[in-house]
Image (cartoon, rainbow, N blue to C red; front, side, top):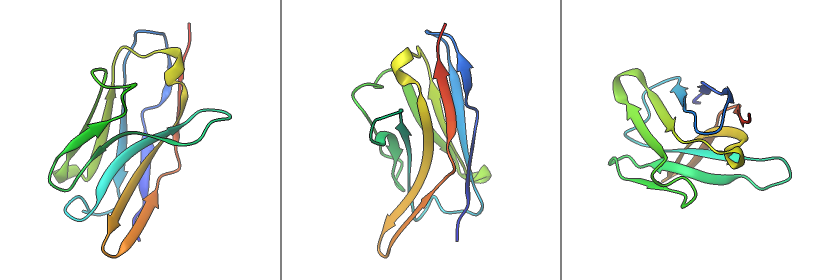
Length: 117
């Protein structure tokens, strides 16, 4: 079992920045793809960014050039640096760890990000 704990959410003005953190309870980055997802009220949960075991990254088109996903293997922590935030980035942000052989998925509890003036 793996626990994922997100932190770093909050209220920020448009154009501002936040850094989200996702701490895993044990070392898993060699086996799991890590991702950040978000869910706004009334909308489906969507992928924001992900980083594979090999370090490859991909991003939703809506955040490309503004958000950066990274990880610190020594701290078992994945980060999401969010710059130039927009009101439409407002959502609960979730951390996800998944692997395909065998299929295993873990989710964090989520952290609220609100972008508003």
